[in-house]
Length: 153
Image 1: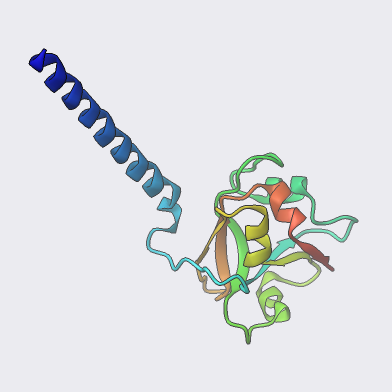
Image 2: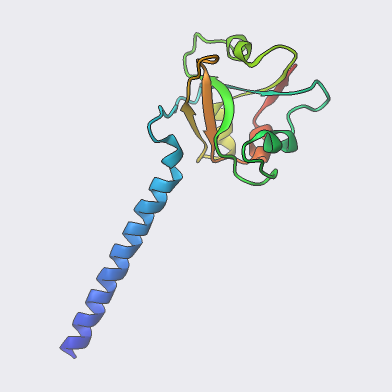
């Protein structure tokens, strides 16, 4: 009887420890794409995604999903979608659009508007030589992204 109680206690302790380890590992994987990069958290962060063409509408889930690398479906999660962003209130949408090139259309939003669609959305600063505002957006679907954006041609 004592041996069975000890065995059950050890098994319960093992299960609890395993569950904690799994939770920690999954949390690390979920945030691994932010490793070494500055996560941006301000709800007022301005975000711009450039899209080719001037057709109506320009900000569709298909356009956003196929523009991601790798390409994803409208309901699949985006990983490292290339955008311009800034949490500096002095930076304007025009400044964020400038490094993205002329003759483009844009989907514009804020981090707060994206969080209204998915609380898990993650954006990290990833400056490049040609775009100091370059960021990577993850953990949101193209449908959620376009539901939170406005078109700007």
